Amino acid sequence: MGETVRLTSARDGFQFDAYRAPPTEARRGGLVICHAIWGVTPHLRALADSYAEMGYEALVPSLFDRFQPGFAERDFDPALYARQNGFAEASGWGAEILDLVQAAIDALKPPVFAIGFCFGGTTAWLAASRCSGLSAVASYYGGHIAERLDDAPKVPTLLHLGRTDELIPPADVEAIRAAYPDLPVYEYDAGHAFVAPNGFDAEAARLSSLRTLALFANNGGGRSSA
Image (cartoon, rainbow, N blue to C red; front, side, top):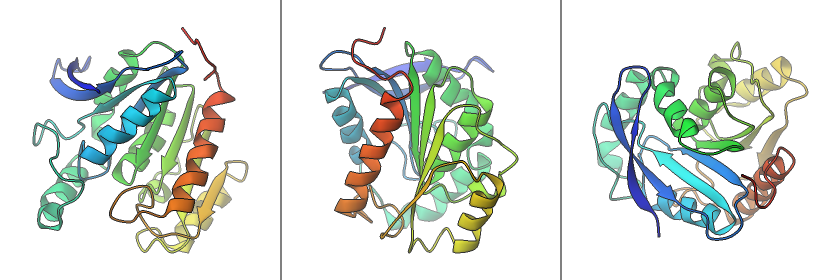
């Protein structure tokens, strides 16, 4: 039910695509969804649609458009892993593409929230620190957050992590907890990508979604938000 829209970076005028899903009931706010290394996949477009059904105007910006324009046709493709991971590394694991995240935030009426998965989970963490106009952020299994602990969130933020995630070792989780003892860090009996098709865990996906929605509701995401 969504559509492709064009956004423009205020930094250099670069134009890029985003998937937009308009709210289908009383608006609760705007939502920027930061994708994993696989890009704007069918799963994330469907996820944006599901948030739209709950009243969120959702945007999924194509954060790799400077490297490879267009949306992904598959949810994941192991044959493309090296290329996609290379895009993530070239973007500084989100640090160099925050102008695109900011453009998506600016395209939405407040309150605006953000979520992100894997690469996008780290990007969402950085957005909570460096971007303006956000009301709250939920990061899912961001694998490079422990390397960016100097980027303190400026808005209410929570983390969703899997206890058996091989990409995020326990030492990283403990480092995050030590640096931010008051930050909600939720761990689930699941591995990496527990919201995505390639690692889906129904209970972890359900509970993390409830906690994310509560975060939004407690930070301005009420019905009929302007």
